[in-house]
Length: 494
Image 1 (cartoon, helix red, strand yellow):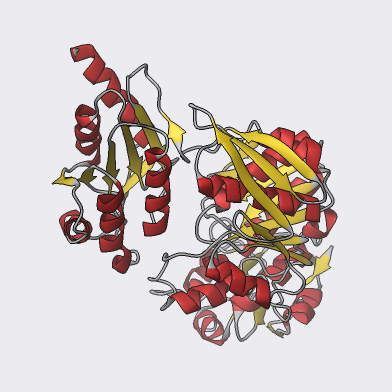
Image 2: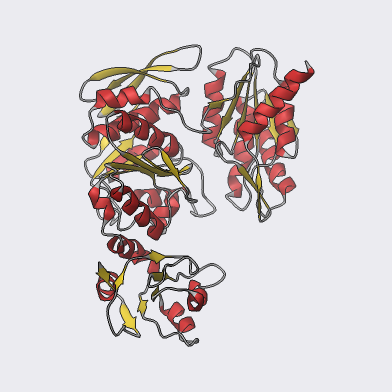
């Protein structure tokens, strides 16, 4: 049990309105309405309003906030204890970890960061570790799983109180290994402080999130918080893919990293042996020994992801032979996911929503079929607008038919977003046929109608997502459902 005074000591906080008796704190949360009675409400400064504004109506027994939050609380008749710190986010992870009994020290914690491949690599790790008889928890973009059971969460990397609560649940259920995606936002906002990572892994870096990070260098430095020897968020060991220049820089920055490569020398290397007609890849992996295994997922980028997953596993002390057997069963929702309704062309849905990722998935399809390639592509609203024309250009350079459509427009004008993607596609000086179709369902119809036997079509951007954010609403929309519907309707007319 943790007392308020102990939390104040950990946070370096002063206590305003000290309690007459120091009851234990067993809950910490950011949502004022969901804090359990007697728990600790962490009131953060927001972009529009300070969280302390909502403190008075909370059932919390105490409040953690900054000086601005304290001033708001003191304007009310609230006399509950208040822990006051300079920066709530900087210490929130440590406070939450203490409240929940330092749960990440009870299992092996593996984190994966980078621009592309985080989700795929964590799914590979889950499959491989499970095959190696580990009890695995998974946290990431597609949600949270505890030994295969889905647990609802919203963010790629949950906020610190929810993360530590999940860790405690996993610990209590006997999980031995937790695999999680660690986003740059999570690192910058301190969501993983207080988490005891055994291994940190780096996939790659390409343009993304420049609405949050001013430059690519800032984006890299955010990721580097997971690897720098003097960072409080660093892991005990580092595994870095050095296939790109950002990975090479990260390997130089990290302390004694295990390096991974699909081209050139590294501690762990992977080489493609052959590809069968279903896109399955036979891979030779060299680590402590040489192994061969078959990866059911296509794409050169997945060879790198598999090698990185294997390197993380062996760095964590897991036997590679059973782990690689598990990789042979790996599949990731919405990542190069094939839609098969008996049609005479390849249909795929993928999450690619960055220029480099779009180029990579289209190159993979180009290597799998002899026919033409078609793609439906859009860009998200209220996000990095500079990548929109780059996404259009990648699509036009790599495909024969490009359908520019809506992604998640959020509060922006969908037509303006499409115009930016179209401009990039048309300026790419490529031979692709380019059309604009909205809404997204009609764009998928157009893509399917265009396809002929031997072609391949792909819808990129949303992958596993089952909602489309339009204005402030989330409407049901699943690219996989829409692709199946479009194919079935076409077949019914044949």
